Each structure stands twice: as C-alpha cells, then as structure tokens.
Length: 488
Image (cartoon, rainbow, N blue to C red; front, side, top):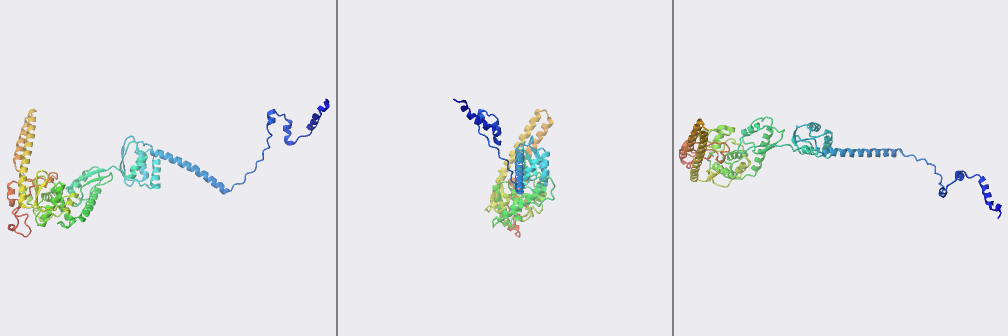
C-alpha cells in the first residue's frame, strides 16, 4: 500500500485549511469543539431591535387617567371598608348612658357632643356615615330628644336611634273628672317638664288621657295637645250623635258629659245616667246633681273639705242644679271619652231617678214611688255599712289601747280609750250621703250629715219650693216632690 496514496486526502485538507474561512464562522472553525457542543446546532444571529412606533398623545392621556381612577377606586374601597368596620364595631361606652340632644343643634355639633360624652370613638367616622345615609341614601335626619344608649353601642346603633327618634318617653296620666285647674297643678308639679302655662284653659276643654313627652317638651305643649285632642274627639263623635238627644250644641254635650263623669265611675252606667238627665231636661225638671253644688262652691279645686251642708244646697250659685233650671253655664270637670259618647248616644230608657245600691252602682227608677222605695232600701244598706265601719274603728282603737297599756303608757291608753268612745259615737250617728254616686269617693266628694227626718219632709230640703216643678206651674199643681237622692 502506498503511503502517499493514503495521505493524499489529508494533504488536500491541509490545503483547504490554508484558505480563509467565512467571517461568521471563523470562531467556530478556529476553536476546538467538545463532542457535546459538536452535537448542538449552531445558533442563528439575533435580529436587530426595531424602533417602537410613536403613540398618540390622547391615548396616552386616557391610559394615565385609567391608571389614576383605578388607584383612586382601590383607595375608596379600602377607606369604605375601614369606615364600615369602625361603624359596626362596639363603641367605647362602658355602661348605658342617657344623652339629651337639644332642639336645633346641627349634625356636626351632635357628633362632637357624642364623642365628648364617650358614646362614639371618632366623630369623623360618624360624620362620614351621616353623610352617606342622610345625603346619599336619603334615610331621614337626626332628631332632638333624650336618648338612652346601651353599653358598647356601635355607631350604627347610635345613628339608628337618632334617625328613628327613639327618645326616652316620659308619661303623665290625667284621670277623667279632673278640672282644668287640677290638671294644670299636676303639670306644674311634674319635674320632668319645664316652662310655665300661660293661663288655665277653659273648663272641660282638656281630654283626660295618658300623654307621652320628651325632654324638650314644655308644660304648655301638653296643654295644647290635650286641647287639640278634646276638640278633635268632640267634633268626631258629634257627627255620629243620636238625633233625638236633648243637647243641641257640642258645648252643651260637654257640660252634661262633665256631670255624668262626676256622677259615676262605672262605664256601664254612664249611658243610663246620661239618659236620666236628658229625660229630666225634656220634662223641664231640675238635674239636682250634687257635684254641681260642689263646683259652685269651690270652683276648679273641685274638692270640698267638709260634707255638703243644707245651707250649701240652698245657696244660689250659677252651678247649683238644685236651684237653677237646665244646664250650668260651663262644664264642671274634664269628661273622658266614655262620658261624652254616653251623652251623645244615651241608653233607651224612661228613667228619671237613680240612687246608690251599696255595691258601687246605682238603682234606677222611672217613677217617684219606685225611687222612694229604692231610697229606703239604700238607707238600710247605709246603716249596715255605717255600723260595720263603727265596729272596725272601735276594734282598731281597742287594739291600740291594749298595746299602749301593755307598754305601760297610761296617757296613750287613755287617748286610745277616748278614740274608741268617739268612734262608737260617730258610728251611731245617722249619716246620709250627698255626693256624686259611686264616683264620689274617688272624686273626694264628701257626704252631708243631714238628719233622716229631712228626707221625710222634702220641703225642708228644698226651701218650700218644688225642684221638679216645671217653669210656670204652681207647686200645688206640680207632680209630687221626690225624696232627695241621697247619692247625688
């Protein structure tokens, strides 16, 4: 084998190496490559960077605004969430407290007051919530009043309380049958109210009821509310009145209702008593109501400090229905709703008289003879009641005397014995009631102590004049005179 022949290819290759390699592959040809590198493909050269096209200025501005509003929205959402957490978390109050919000105080001042009194922790958060609920959602406004906030009340609870006006409500109750003067006195004595009353209203113009009031209400406010309530109620029921009633004006209805109110405290009797008075007015008979005597004597005080005396029955006053015909000039008290309705829708009876039955009610009669029998029955019941009262008083005094004697107090024992004797003497005396029926006790109306003989002689009680005689009819032609009703 020829050596030259074998190396002929190599020689040719060396010739090729002497030739210059292309510029892009010069490094690869000159540097030795490892077996692994030899297997990798040769990477193409990187392309040159192309310049970006120029962006429109308007699009750039929109891109900036979008970025700004996106960041702003994220910030608002964050603040809203933080305010909501603060708004709903428990407040700083360690115990429940009462805060008075004055009338006319602004929202900012209210928030500052609540923060100062420790009801809320941050007035800025509270103000933000107020702006949202009041001005964005339109959910009402803050109301003045006296409010009680519970322990650890959240701002949401505080705001709901102020918007809904859940203020502390005080109450004052006026019973039916009080006079306007008595109502004014009670208002003036109430420490939860302030301000004075300009003048005592006209009698009967106030509606008795339970009235609620807040810290900022005045006494005059209550008076005006009572006047408005009475006027509205009277106007309403007047439109629904029976056609055959005697009274012809709302004022007359109010006057008669005040007398009915004073005569009985039982609701079931009011329509019947109202009918008795209307039947008597139709027959031109005098009403002969004891409460009118008392009002004529003491006026708005409506309380007589002694039993009705015979000379007081005979005394001429504009209100004494034993002496005058028809109705008195004004109401004698403030009647309630039931009494007004009873006058405008009375019972359908022919009764002309009524007398106490001893059980808190009355017995009614349409004739004088029947009424006299009822009076006689009442006299028996009254004597029994008087005897029981005397026995109870004597027993109580005897017990006090025994207790004093056991204690060695001779003077006290002597006084107790004297009291026992006096109680027995008082109990033995006959007593005839002359007040306003079953309601007389509750209305503080006293009974007279006329002797029983007075009822056997009507002339002695009525000064020789027939109180039931129609006007213009001589006494000798008038109907027989009844015994005076011992409960009226």
